[in-house]
Figure 1 (cartoon, rainbow, N blue to C red):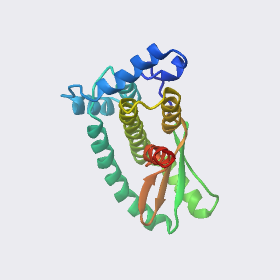
Figure 2: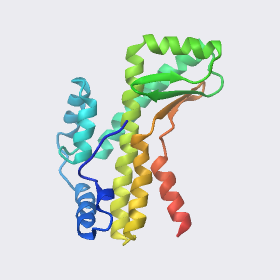
Figure 3: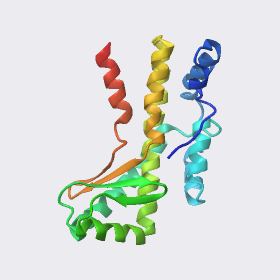
Figure 4: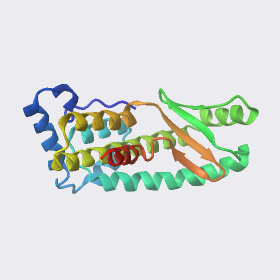
Amino acid sequence: MEITSNTLSLFNYIGDSEKSNEVLQGLANNTNKDVSGGLDLLESGLSNGKFEETLELMEKGEIDIDLNLVDNYYQFNQQKLNREVAQLARNFDLGSETAVTLQDGKLVVEGDSDNAKALQNYLDKDTRLSALVQQTAKLQQFVEWGQAKEQAAVYQSEDMPEDQLIEFLKEARLVMTQDNQFLMSNKGSAFYSQGHTQSIIDKIAQQT
């Protein structure tokens, strides 16, 4: 999923410290905004089929939704998915981990075994489950990106050099622009994007 943002265009301001500082100050300010009604906005976007538009407005800062609300929505969806996957694991003998790539609005099951082909056929037909997987993936990716923006504000307060901060944001941004994967097994389900931001934070901590 790729969402373009005008609010966090720090990459466009390399070499322009005044512009980049304005962008980074916005990151810090956004963490203290009033988020009343945020859940209603999120639910409205989901129910009206305007999920992408809602996330884009959130990222641009045009609507304020607490990251915790998005995370709670993601966790709720993930619980539903885990129940679905438990049933699929029984039906399609998902003993080992099966990867499903989210690509161009479709779910693509990896592998050419009979079980993989049967699962692909099932996902192609079950539009409700397909929509739930894709919606949950986007929520998870947005949670990761939200965490990255919050961490960027922390790094700014700690006077991290601008070039390092830009590199952090570039790497964190990949969670929004690269194809995600939905991983299923008889033990549950997860998205490949989970933990993306924390892994970068940990890497930076090890270097300091």
